[in-house]
Length: 205
Image (cartoon, rainbow, N blue to C red):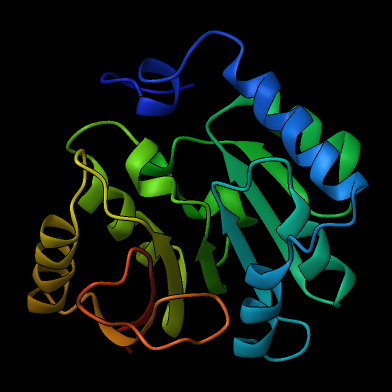
């Protein structure tokens, strides 16, 4: 399923964490909590009927919302328990168990997507040292001129400083550039003291 080193999702969490995560979001949905801000953001960026990848899809709520909006939605996650829950709770999209550092076009139906959304602070849970590779892989499955949107909170394991250095390296190589950055999925402005970043990358044409 994955290569060494293992993603932090497995190494830096407690046993039973996956099931806890699944039940937590099932409870939030049952309580009517709005969990679709990321999906609305993605839908706003996409033309009708776009091909969209939910990278690190968890239990699939965003992928299903995009599918329901008329897009061709794919959801991938490294955790087979989460993918099983996605297929059960949020059917419609095409799901797969994928390590994002090994993501290929085959995982998104064999052709580039129009938009990638990596929403759930996923970068702090990938394998140490693979963060830049993951971002490159997200760009590589996106069509020229398409967008990659990443939601990320600064953590000791992956700081904003390192994140921005990785993004700058991708820009220098002509892979993608930062187009916009917000502090929330509701377009609030990003500031130096923001504790979350929604970064919109434009893949090179």
